[in-house]
Figure: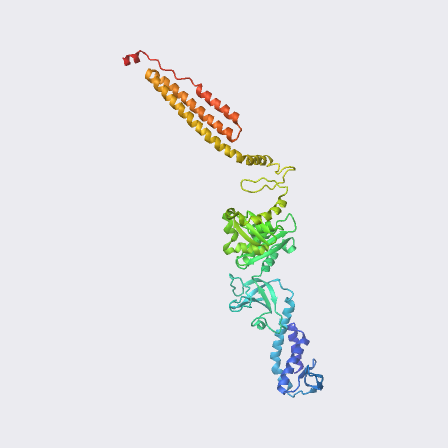
Length: 526
């Protein structure tokens, strides 16, 4: 081997960024194995290459002394020169394959040293080749990565890091996450063909990919003002991300969504239109679980710290929305919060109150501590007032009067209900009897007067009818007054005044005077 070949090796080492001494050492080891087989030596061979002239020297290492029975080695070895005459020809035959292998291994080792500390980082590359089992992505010149998507049925130990809804075309640009860098010095490969595949393994399904994309699009997250607390993801379908702000005046959800949704839209487009829900993180597990089930509206959350279970009560029309398609929303919420979530409808809880009675009892103490000092007023929609109660009262200044009236109404409700029923029945019977007697008496008087004088019957009937109307009005009014008095015990004076006015109006009406007969009427009658 001439000095020209040594100069070529030096140039190759500089081009491939390989240590020159490492390249020569690997070549000497490979030549030693080849010369031992060619020269049929009984002892191991050793090859030395002169770094200046390029001359090759072959030595047979002969053992001296007694052999150790345990290790099978000798205490010392004596080199014996066995360099053949055609040493350059044999070296040239092995030089090409050895050098190519050394360059390939050295390149993989260099890539491993560079990227082993970059696990979890986001890289951008272009698709070079797609196979049924993996996709080769070019990160830069000489550096390639592998995106595996093996079929689990054919290879159980292999990875599948491609979302189900994604298919890649040649030269398509992709952002992916580095999840592993294979060590080229490993004796055994964990998967089939790993020694011939790229060392860098990337993923498009890892939850941290969502974290890195938001760091790129949201400056507040990159600066650390907004923190991503947890991520739950079903790649290709839907993801949930919980965020919190270290500044009280900054809305973390609004910062991640961006103006008109511009920031989160860029993330969704990069993930092939995967749905992303951004929710507010809360230290209180009750509110955190409620927020995690968005967009469903939650009525109540019952927490059991011992079993780490959360029972969520939702309105009947929100049950399917809270569960999601095939349980997707509830499943992602459970992963995001770390709680076992049990969702129940309000109607089911009403039919089976004992089903959650234990949780309600356990939650009562926590609710009492949390609600201490709050106004106890409940609106018509079932929501509780958020204001603080006034000192010495259970209600705030706004609802103090209405709350006291509501309490009195509730206390009198049971007794007044029975009195109303009794008073209504008694007043109804009295009104019926009075009406019957008045009608019967009026009819008899009218008949007697009509038979005595035909002309005066019209006038008498009119007076009787007026009296009957007044009597009926009086009886009906008395019945109404009695009902009001029995039911509430209030407004009696107003009802009596109204009754007296109505009765006086009816009775004060003048009776219709009989029309006087003139001569023409008398003539007609004769």
